[in-house]
Picture 1 (cartoon, rainbow, N blue to C red):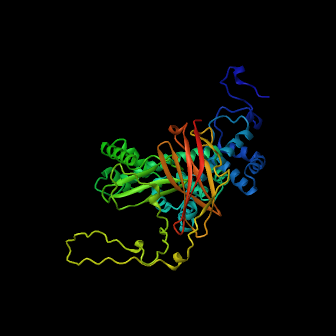
Picture 2 (picture 1 turned 90 degrees about the horizontal axis):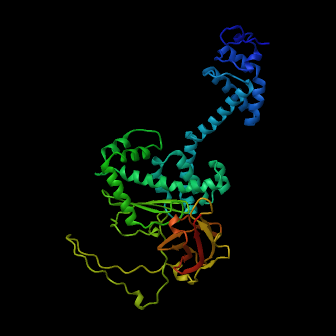
Picture 3 (picture 1 turned 90 degrees about the vertical axis):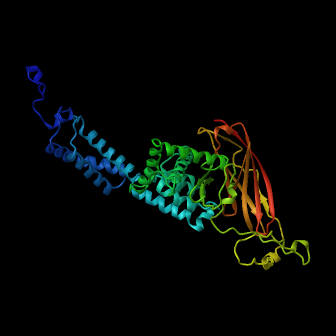
Length: 465
């Protein structure tokens, strides 16, 4: 029985210190020897507890050892009311720390890099999109955090049919509803990366502080944050950022389709290059064009197909002597060079393959479930997008399959993705300003011989939720 010294008029301490008294609390720090004794007395119980938590004995023994080492490095400052509850709490916290550390580890980032490189390969880009995702991936790598790169990689894997939605949720440790929100937030991150890349471009307008930030070696994923932090304090960079965003709004209309919901165009003054970033159902694109795009000129998404050489449809053979066989001569251009102008050359004859084509137009096969959901919302409390799938029968082959979506005053053309014998795309998500409107969905197929087929799939109602 413990006797309280307060009954004797002495300072409040406990007499008769035994192992049992530790269980009801000691108002002082334990010595390392006492902690060692505490761990030895409860080692068997802690090992069984850890094995139940981690699932195997080897990792359980490592966890028990980690608990003991932590107590030796940092002895607890508070009283230990119950040794087993205390040890179990330490083990549980170490397990959570290990999971968080693994999620932020370079191994996870390197895996995302490998997956992005794999998806950017020629044979995989065709499955995700006909656009050049590889250039955007190369541009985004130094400007996105490892987590953002991971989300980008799994989004491309999901849209390309490499992984299912359930597998992506497991890999990212997210619920399906949280997964959709995460993909939508990626739009803001990508936009910041595009602006940061524009400000960091090596041209005459680059700010010295931005150049200094670019030249500094730093952990992966912090360059974009440092550039935007500098923009808040630099008037010149703020003006350039505003001008860049204004040029984006003037050069490209807002398209609420796909992952980003926008097509971003950035004009580089020094090299007159236009960087366009788009997300078509999760596939991202950046293209370089040597032409100068004047403000107010829209760049359609269909001109950015650079993942593979564009195969021009071969025209059928024309009969000899017809008017269509005459080649019109372009107007002469006065040149300051002394080299004489070359006479116009006759058009090459059509290939034997083109001559043998019978000109059969492709057929679009669309059932009542071609559009999976006819009503989608603009918020996170309801479904924000719907899948579109059609079949295509083309005896002469398929040149392109595209989906056109028209809502309010916006029209966008999206390349569909082929998986097996079915072509897929998606409609949505839409911003809140499109609530109450309907989206008209049309599929256009161009055959290898130039034949064209169009099919109206109907409408998708957009509601606020």
